[in-house]
Image (cartoon, rainbow, N blue to C red; front, side):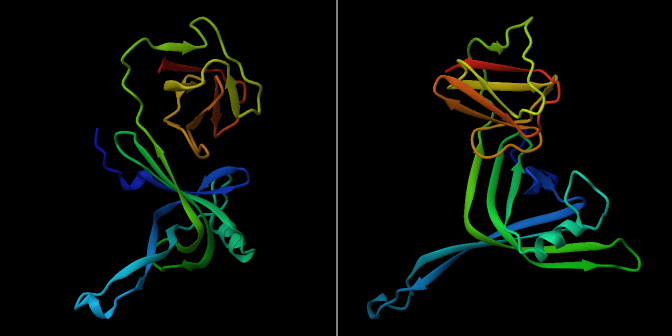
Amino acid sequence: MSNIVAGENFVFHIYNGGVWKPYYCARSGNIQVNSETLEISTTGSGVWRDFIPTANSFSGQIDGVMAVDTTTTLQWSELRTLQFAQTKLLCRFTATSQAGDVYIEEAYFYITNSVATAGFDGVATFNVSLQGTGAITQIYTPPTPNPTGTVYRYPAAGATAPVTPGLVTVTIAGLGSKTILSVFKDGIGNNDIILTGTPVDKEVLYETSGSDGVFTWAIPFDGETFYILYQNI
């Protein structure tokens, strides 16, 4: 598997209404980081100038095809509303390699510019400019370890682990500080196990609280069961 990130696997989300939402029909996005510098050259510096870094700033941009009447994703009208209200947005740029490794940059932004364009011979498009504020949080998700010893299952074969509908977090006694290999919900594997941040789509967040393992999904349970494959460290 390649460590290259395909364009379709570099995804932009906005945290809105308690969930992470992608923009409907987005075509591309970018995040740009600038590091300002201050010249400290002196007479003794010679012909070469000296600089030191002072402050970092960042901005972003997304563009795509306009669409309306979507419910689980953000659309053009909602982005306009957020801009009009000058809403501070928590955003994510997620890069997933073909080998399954994940790198996320999470930060707050304001929408500073939005453009809607209509063409006679094509579909309507949009462009949104974002100004970052504060610091960028980097989230790394390591690849799943190669099993080298006994693999355990929770719950054990023959048992079930029902979860109260509406819950997104499950605490399991004794599963703290384990090597988590795979997590399955309703028989479908979660595509990424993250160790920090907020899960999105099919991610699951694994944390340790004492000797307990704490698992948080992005989507609430609705009668499904789950199971976990793990190894002792």
